[in-house]
Image 1 (cartoon, rainbow, N blue to C red):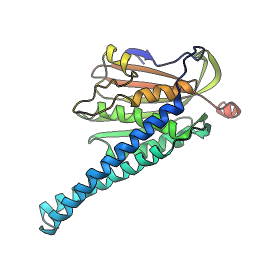
Image 2: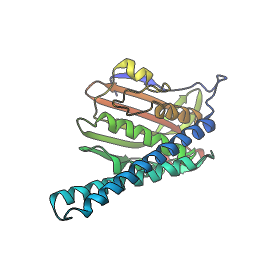
Image 3: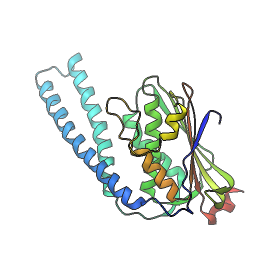
Image 4: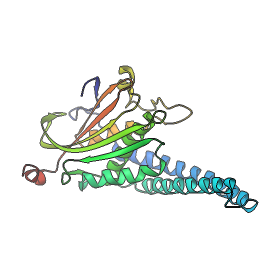
Length: 260
């Protein structure tokens, strides 16, 4: 892939393992709190917008602008509702899931709030590959990585390509598996310096400006993938973009279908 690389992996043979269920509850409560605060702000936006429309001709330029504000608030309300649904999911249960379905759900989740001049392209090479994971946890991984990539393109615009492939690797984190699902997030954003890439999974580390980013989303990503005996690899070049590869062991009883 080129550029500076970092592998975000945890050796499962060590004694310290991430308490992923506890982390999920904490981040779920945070998501619920954010959704509640967002709904409070949206109520104010709706109220003043409706008051403004009462004194305006809705067909006028000002009236049309108010309608655009309301439509934007509607999109934000959808996003808030999805955040609330995530916060209510506190159980942690791994099941066999089709990765492409979670990718599609993540893209649908993000689209209402995408920055202007950005686009997402889905490149599904292995549509039938399955992994054993909690669906909502995996959705959190994909949403966090996609949002992080889109924020890197917020000022200049660009493209995020999400690729799903089946790959063979002999050994990841000392746990062998015949097949892995490779989910690649490749953006054309501003890229990162080596020191930034080295810290991107650290708790509360963020490069977001004006209060954007809490620095916990990528830490949760790292914990979830580590719990799945997976691997995260990062390749980034300043002003060229970033590629993040997520590797998750494929479900064994489906592997033969990947070679047909």
